[in-house]
Length: 141
Image (tube, rainbow, N blue to C red; front, side, top):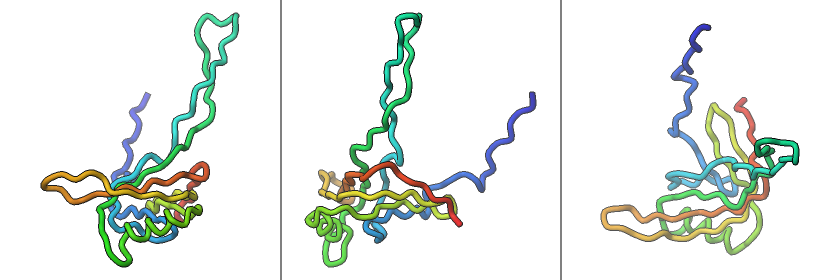
């Protein structure tokens, strides 16, 4: 059996240039984000005749999705925009643009807060997105 061909370097996704958008606006201070999917729960499908436990994939649970970002304040800042969306309490578009690798999209109700602080670090904040459903992926054109 022949060895498989390794994945070409130009096909490997880096985090350079990934753009997180909330309500169609780039979250400029974004530093990292949660998984774009969820583990399904496992359903017990074991019968009395089975000699080992049998499980089947169940539903995926999408509780929330988080984006960490560098806190910035003032007119037009990420924090101000997210606080405005939080106060409105309505679902808005959320997306992660992977450039040539496509876009993941969803809708979410937004909440944000400032995280604890430490000496020698930039102040961080978190955007919590209560997702409206499963992420959809659109291939780049």
